[in-house]
Image (cartoon, rainbow, N blue to C red; front, top):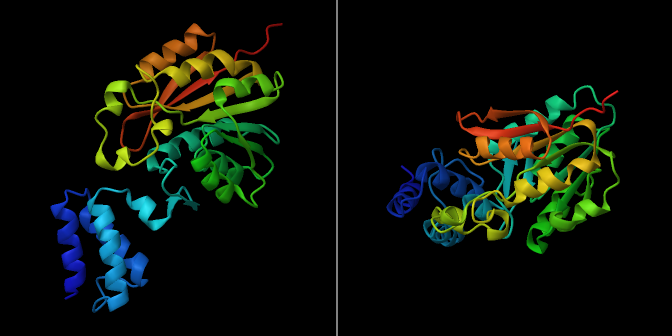
Length: 276
């Protein structure tokens, strides 16, 4: 029996780490490059490194930060302190965008509040002829975005989405997707321990959590071609309010899609086609 691995599991369980055994196995493999179920135990040097990582995970630092990378769809992203961890829930946002672009030749796509670039990169991998631009304001997140997009053909812009729309040509974009900050002030005050380690800039959506949705609905439609789409990740209880914002600002065919956990996760809004 691998007593070191059992002790690692127990240590994380005592710290109330969710899925403690999974996390322990990930850390063990990361340090030793061996399967803990088949291994006799770590070397002295490996045990010392495991001890450091276990202490950080027990302090509820995200597992993704400790590993330095995380899978999204069929690729792996560099991740660490200062950038939002990519989540499986966001994969359905990317999948919805890919579906909407099926009949668009060489689509022009913007990923706003891009973070690691997971959404934009997912679209670019599905459509190699797409012209994808990822936009991120945070200097800390920018480091990961540029590392993840290097050599992919995806363009990056360091800018504030609250003003960047003024730099866009009218009717020049086919689809805009975004996982914007959407937590309310109340939610920001009651974060899970792991989420509290992630950058507030990537989480805080203002008092009611809707600041970025107002901006995107009000300001970014001009850049889209008629019939273009706005694809937005939302919090699981925000669908009705974001759809209402879409109607308020003249978007059409608004609908909501659920993630694989059954929660509302994606809002689709279409720019009206030109009449006549």
